[in-house]
Amino acid sequence: MAALLFSKHKASLASDAIVRMGRAGLEFYDDLLRGLKTENSNHCFGKALGAVLKVAPEKIPELLVLTDSSSVAERSSALVALAYCGKRATECYPEVETRLLAILKSNPEDRIWYSTTWALGECARTSATVDALFARLDSGDMARKGEIITALGTIGIEAERVVPRLIEMLDAYEEYDPDRCYHGEHERVVSALRGFGNAAALAVPALVRHIWEKPTKQWTDSTTEPKLVECADPDEEVITLLGELGALARDALPALLEVREQMRQRNHADESQDESSYWNLAIQRIQNATQGR
Image 1: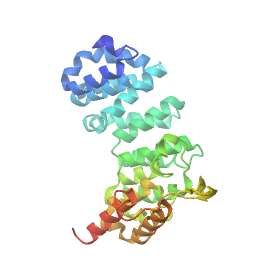
Image 2: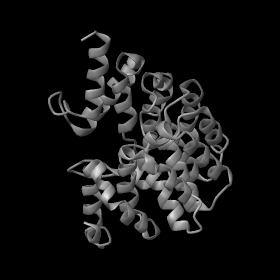
Image 3: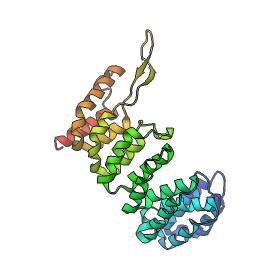
Image 4: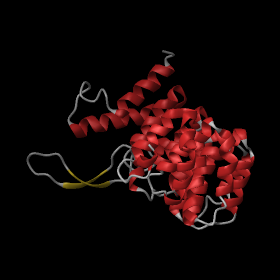
């Protein structure tokens, strides 16, 4: 197994196997530590090490020491391991959050900054981290702003403070990562709102305003003379969250019914053909919850 960890094509498989081993994964602890200096974007060593730390938290202080390593690769990978360990790290050692905050406030170079913000999102449990992230949320750097939004949603505390700021981000934040736009323009912010459960209901009016994406040029579906027209698509992630909120999103029903009607006309679909569409499923969830089913 150790040899596979350092194999170009088998490292991910070996990492996943160690994740499933539980405390028995300690057998490869030293190998995982050695691999931190050679970690790549797949985080094979950090992921496996994080899983080991969850079941062997007595090793967490050793990883915390590595967050001060002179090797940027090793520091970053140690932070990634703590991220994969999650809140188990701060439950056992509250000083983990203190250390992560100190790194963030030192304004480290990009690689360490992103690893630290990720680790804080997964590990933090106090308002001190919310304060530190808030202080950096107005950054003009959309990439950093996006990671802070994600971290705030993952932490999921102090909804009365955070949810209003996330609502602002529906207008103020422009996604920089195309991988976070597959399900709508506001996928990252909506995902962060989801982390607050029913408290996200405060965002319903703003979500309704963003129920359609920005119009783009699209070819009309016509067999006679296709035309390039400006057209907007429904925002899938926004609509899905509205459905998840159930009765708390009852005020969104008129807008959702309008989406369904427009999409039926556009797609020349009848009731049976769009039954499984995400907008129809959201409508059904809200109606069922409202009716107490």
